[in-house]
Image (cartoon, rainbow, N blue to C red; front, side, top):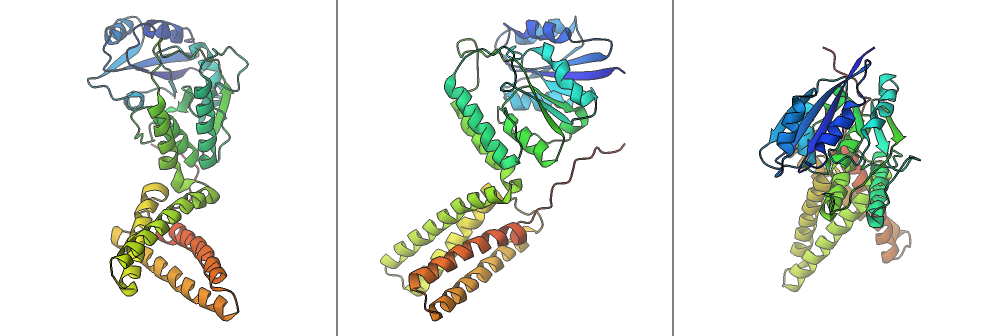
Amino acid sequence: MTHLLSVVIPCYNEEQTLESCVDKVMEISSDSLRLELIIINDASADNSLSIAHNLAERYPVKVLNHEVNQGKGAALRTGFKHATGDFVVVQDADLEYDPLEIPALLKPLINNKADVVLGSRFLSGGAHRVLYFWHSLGNKFLTLLSNMFTDLNLTDMETCYKVFKREIIQSIDIKENRFGFEPEIVAKVAQRRLRIFEMGISYFGRTYEEGKKIGWKDGFRALYCIFRYNAHKAPVPIQFLIYLFIGATSALVNLTIFMGAYRSGFPVEIAAPVAFVLAAAVNYLLSISILFRSKVKWSSGVEILMYALVVIAVGTFDLYFTKGLLDNGFSPQLSKLFATGLGFVLNFLGRKYVVFPEKKSGKWKPQEG
């Protein structure tokens, strides 16, 4: 049986390696594996575009062009839209990854054992160029953090080699324009409960002098993307840890506003409720910015109403629970400490299951027709 593989090649100022890359990719073509190469020139300032057009005269290459540089994620988004193969693989034009290893990555897909296959630079016994220690450490840290949020056990989340069934990658709405694509796509395939495989690959990295483009800003963006695309579906213990930060920030806002108002001469009857309401508003905004998705079940107005009801309910619980402990001989400090701790848990549960409830992610199924 013959399969068609779409090889999506994002390209930005890669005139030194683009032709060699395409030549190598074409070496994996066979009677059972036809190739469709899609080169996306991301507004290169060198001769990459003309080289791509020359390659299109020799090989089955589609050349797509961005007039303005947008980044790797944007180039991939364009390439995926134009793919028509049974499977889609990402191949960087810089030849840090060996195209001759692609057929091995395809096997679990062809055998219908996997929906997505990732190539890991840390599982292979093959050749690896020795480069930057801090890059390697940062990569492992980002992979560990991503795994904590996705509940996967990957060894190399930031890998270039990602192979998909075409209908899967074309059904995913990709938001990131730069290297944030990597944590974003891992988050979104994890949430679909796809069959994800990982296989060892070789790696021939470049130095910055040789054209390496990823930098420290991309590392911080990756951190943001791990939170942004995973938090609302992360395991409950991870969500609770994030809510600890949100709750602590809200408590600090409450205290700061109350003390400022009280010292400015406002009576406690005004300073306390104003500080409480503003802190609750900060809590809500942080919840929808960092942790939960807004308007998942309710309209905006109903969602805010549900949020207010949860706040009132937990506040009422806090009052009576504290009073009950005091009546039973507990000290004021312990009474308030116990009530605050339990109220914190109830606040989290109320937000997760009442204010911002999300359906469990079902296993992805291809659309018929």
